[in-house]
Image 1: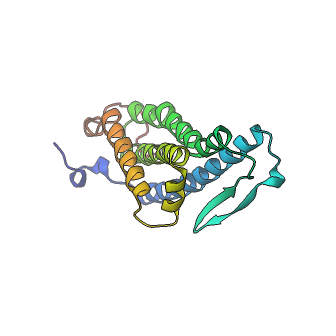
Image 2 (image 1 turned 90 degrees about the vertical axis):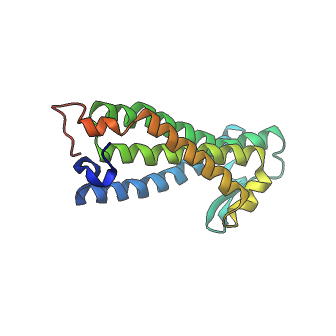
Image 3 (image 1 turned 30 degrees about the vertical axis):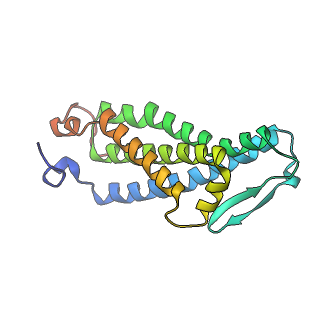
Length: 185
């Protein structure tokens, strides 16, 4: 089996490296925006006017403070909305776009884009679950480094990466799988 360092297919050009870095940055900012927007849309769907929401930061994390009259199930809906919505969107993007593109024309660039996307999806799904079920622990974890929530989110990220290894195996790159397709994108 050819190792990563030995295969020419396993290297990115400078342009691909730059695009990969920009993709990670855009994915991070987009994920953040969609996560918070999903919370806001959930609150609006429950009939709460925007004027009753307080936007701010908890440490370096953006936060939305809900009005006190929201409780129980309504509060849980808002808490779950951010991570689960974003995670599902990213998972669908991964399955319908990145996995298909890699299988059509395997390349290291496509493989890495898919890997990063599915890891972000796993992290968001974990955050949605934690934020909904264990909101107080999630909030405490947002203000500390290496909290219990970080361990759970990391576990979901590793699980997502393992899913990617199964759905997009390295051997497809090694064999050069499909001819006639651009491999450099």
